[in-house]
Image (cartoon, rainbow, N blue to C red; front, side, top):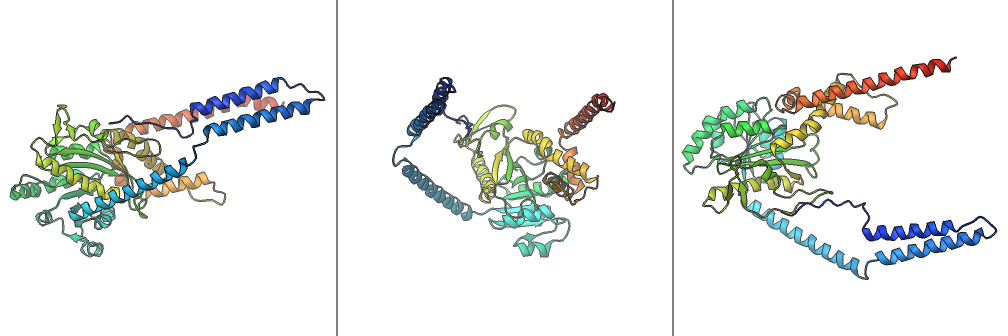
Length: 419
């Protein structure tokens, strides 16, 4: 894999710096010979001529060769045509073998993703409440959670567990007996791909690895958006994922996080063409060609599922569950924490609101619109959250202490000014 190149678009080249240095030296030289006198107008004219000459020389040095822009534009157009052709071929491949996706938990978020999944394949949903009519309007088949056997008999390629954080473990345990029975009955020794979409990652990863039969591949994901932030589409929104287990092999978190392609304005990582994968714990390197058809099919199924998010315009972020929780505690959790704290203050719009205060109110509205169960889950099931709370308390105490110190130092000056 190529080393990522971090390029600052505002950093001048060495040639440009050298030219500007020459200009600067010329200006200094011209300025040092300038003595105010009756000839000052002549000296100023000489300085102006020198500067104009150097500017002209600099422009000549960085001037692209004639026809260069046209050539680059032609290459750009050719690449655009190639990209469009690859995308068409990819879509044809996906549509030739659409996935059958089951969704466990048809609440607000389950409905949100089901509506988009239905454009790319067959969707079957299940939940405790009766959503038959609502699901039918989305083009989704609905089966009550009280009949898990009927749900699994739909020959599901993927099962997405779209439950709350606090009910996640119970949902998995309740599904296990029927899942084990289904795998045994199928006779091919393969189960569906199980996907979680929780806002914490190490917690569901451990539960799925501990409880699920080895025949089930595991993909841990976190769409960093929801029904509100994604109501106008998913383009440009972050989708975090970790390929966790394939064909019974637990993939090493750090190795998998380095694979794939992550694109942003700052960094581009070349796509990894190595078909090997590292087993967690042992460090053993496996190959897709080691008589493991299940691995090839498992990878294909995962890539098809990830491609749905790609085609909807998500920014794909391969990241280990461990690293996700570290980042999330200092971004998502602290946002919810501040929103909840400020929400208890009863803040309301005023006639003299600043743009900054408008932003504060938006944070309060967006965080308090989510259930407190979600906020509690972000706290309880991410071991890094308490560190965030402790650091926030300490930071507040530090700021208040600084204010008190300034006030104390300011008092003598205040009283002296009144004497």
